[in-house]
Image 1 (cartoon, rainbow, N blue to C red):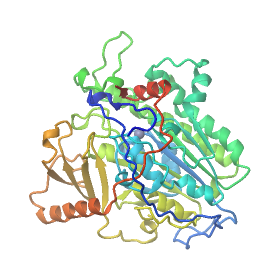
Image 2 (spheres, helix red, strand yellow):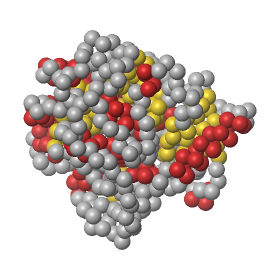
Image 3 (cartoon, helix red, strand yellow):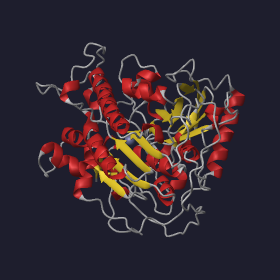
Image 4 (cartoon, helix red, strand yellow):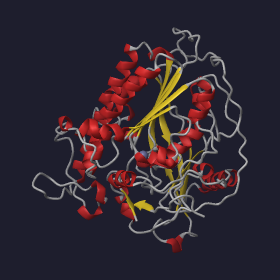
Length: 509
Ligand SMILES: [Zn+2]
């Protein structure tokens, strides 16, 4: 039965496949640990430089998630242009994971998994049927709140708004568009223009709001501050001062204008359609640089307050973006390939995390929550499905047999992929043809010699394919499907939320 109003949403580019929000009133017994106020006990000493001693009070946590930020467009991840000098400098103060994979390359499943430490199957937050983050999950904010933390967030993507349950556990939860609209446009009237949405949810607005939150929470530490930036999510509209950055660095590449997702399409000053996809890629890169400059402003503010040495800083993304690859243009979510799967992951914690360390082992963002809790000296939640990554930098050898799993796809059942070392096995299912759902095709790629995933190596590696298929099957069998109640407080999505969703490429039907 529906709870509250029902609504229908689907990605604009997929056309009219409606889905309905249904609910099953089946209670799920969730084993939830008890997290009373826990005194900070520093982790075991690592081989990190020991210059900074652990402070006597619980450290702060700053979690920065940058929407749609693919790793390989950052200079520290090998990109040819200096898109991220400030992020790169931050990474040099800690551990940079060179090969981090999201649990699902779409905003709400990925963020729900990061905040709960559970796979999308278990959170129940998948693409369809769309469901807000169920309140019976324990979130990072709730865990830290019970350990005495002030919890605050600024989010710039409506897909992780309170409407969809992502405010769970936060004392302060700022949705950047609500204030940003008036602050940036001088009006409370929403014009429903994608460019305007980017203007009043952009990195400068989020950083302003974060600094204002810090004014309120920095005096009573510890705090957990989560910032979810929207740049460089499409439509790519960097501020005017970035318009000519790296002009001439991009080779013209024409694509059919109709192949570009509707919400991403742009026109030149004469009103002509821009079908040169390199111009979009340039704007994507400029948005990264815009975010990167705002990141430095935030870090400078933290330093001014004297908080840098006593704050665990983690920066990552919910997913990447397919730009001109695989004819999957300017999108994310449906394909299992690396442009959307691979994201940055940087962990900085003076004295507790080594400096200038790069971890090449493939890891998953499912491991983020256990990692953070271990670094903060807090107990591992029993329901978390990931495992702490601290051992990846405290031991020299990667853990053998470690698999990293990802779901993707626009419909259920989804596509699956598994990583082991340099290898990646993807189970593909035709996303647009429901008649093909039972057909399974597997592709195997060697990401060291074939980073663009062009040569299927499954034929000459049959045993490895069998092993990885078995790993996928075991993972699926052992990962419980969410079977709990819908959130009782689920409401119809209001017009403002619908308009914000449309601006990011989601249409109401
Ligand atoms: Zn996203």
